[in-house]
Length: 577
Image (cartoon, rainbow, N blue to C red; front, top):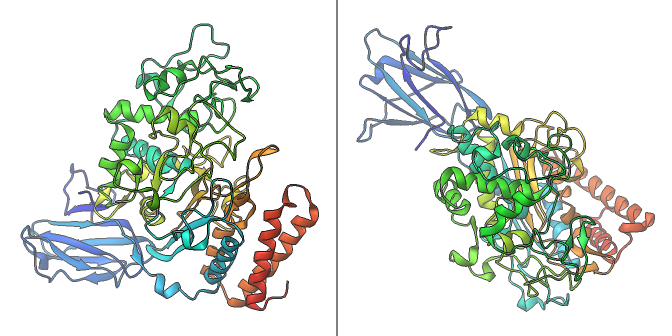
């Protein structure tokens, strides 16, 4: 157990907590939220001390437990964000008092927000889009230490492999407990949390070279672009390590020069593997595309390598380490790699693609899955090369569990009596990259521009989060103490035209699959009225019509279905658009 704040008063010169500037250690700040929190204190003479939170006195008159700790509520005194603790000694020779405060935990406040007009509009839009062909989703919103929205939409699988809609009677509705493939959100909620914990503990030096942890990681003889010898952990985290975005190690016919598959070419023979035991060797052999530090290019390879760094430091496979050191201490029973090996069934999971990794038959490679992927990691590198456990993909979770992991960030490092990392470490990971403020260390940042098409225009520029290819979206706004987990399986829909673009899924054409409508309406829910919600709906309908009128990529059958869905919501609400 580790508390957010632990203090012993009074301190004397030379002690760790002694504040020479005040000749005392009686004052501290801690993260709290209005109407929440408790303090624990232990002293031989509690009456010889006064404790205040934000200037309000806290009574220590309660009954002590077997170890002498008195627990007192501070809910009447706390405010959202920084709270001020004062511990004063009333008498000389009174001995000492020990004080501790846990990190905030999420309470359920959904009932109070049930009729919020913007959240109601969000429900109507997503439900209409599901009816029109969107797959499914799971939403949890936390604000000021409380869950204000918990919603489920659609079915865990809505289509047969050939794209035929399943009859309604055969669909299993998404519930709060449904697991979603987090895809690249794995980078944050598995690998990054592990790295932040290890850095906070002094076991990981962010300025160290990769080869300081993986000695075999070196430049290959005759490398056209050297740089691996001196490549640092920070450069991997900042996606400026020089690696290609996706070397497709699993596909022997992928041509790394042309960046596409050439059937029968075996152009990727040198890097090809479908064995986790060979994965690091293949990463080391992967030629760099640019000198490290000279560009920013998002790459899965960076996090495949970082996962191996975690394993080298801890001596544990990544999934075992995060389960034992993060998920289990936080009480997260529905966050795991390889769910089918850990007590979950396919029906517990949202399906991710209808015909394996084939993009409705357009893609093929050795061992490619052709069945509906459900309960197995969708990402081909993670599944075929890494055995389902990788730093870049493979994690499954539900929105309620993800909300706890996001609250750790809002709380600046911990949750309840669990501290994962200190606040200074968190600051290092989420601060903007000098050359591209939409990147931190791993975290994607809203900044002022560049990532607003995902996060929307409304969150604070300090907001961080990530997305996942399967359709998962997370956003953490530390300034407004708000977190959003919007988990979907937007690609559990047919491919629009496999011959033209095998990555263009029907689900990506709906507003729910573009992500930004969710944070937009969530933020509006904080300062809203039914009139404002209706006006925004009218804007959405008109904007969608304008997209269709403009033609091109937006003039498609699912876009027309989405417009019809939005128009049906407008009619239902009596909105002229």
